[in-house]
Length: 95
Image 1 (tube, helix red, strand yellow):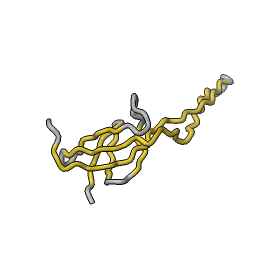
Image 2: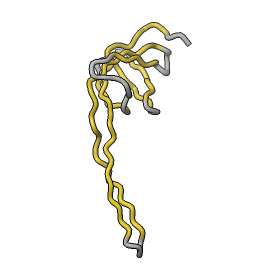
Image 3: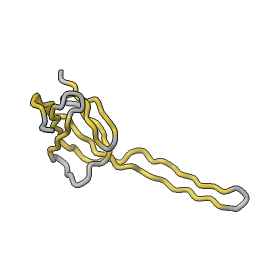
Image 4: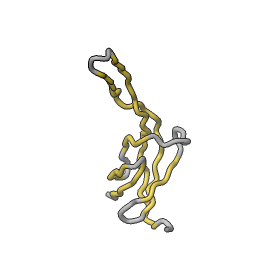
């Protein structure tokens, strides 16, 4: 079982073949597109398929200033991309 560490969206993920995970949104890619990452440990290529985009949990933001009657409530839902790791290549990438 091959294990790799990939970096996307400013975060690092420990992955293995067949694993599905949510990563920060990958722009300009559609469902069923193939993407390629570089393994940070061994320099191998990691091939993945995009399964779709999903929204995360809602985060509530509340601004308040005492004695001024100022209150603002807003929310935010981050968009994530779900990917599946298809193959962890054996060849090294060119640097």
